[in-house]
Length: 106
Image (cartoon, rainbow, N blue to C red; front, top):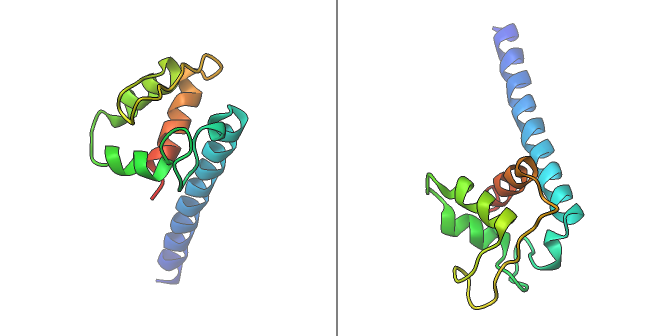
């Protein structure tokens, strides 16, 4: 019984560590790729708050793919008149990391 509880504890701790690593990677990448010049987690700046993006796309099966494309190629009309420019400095793997992090914001 003790061993089972210990294993459960290790699994839970590992899951939290993994989530923390993803949060750090996403946040660090957003800063490094200059996303934070136009976005913030909780407040609208030039672009929408990441919490608002997460809420808007919650439960949509194609949200990740749609947002990866927007991060890389830009977009317009979804959040108002100001378009999001393309981000050629962000590759697909980085865009996926960013989008997963954005969608995890609550």
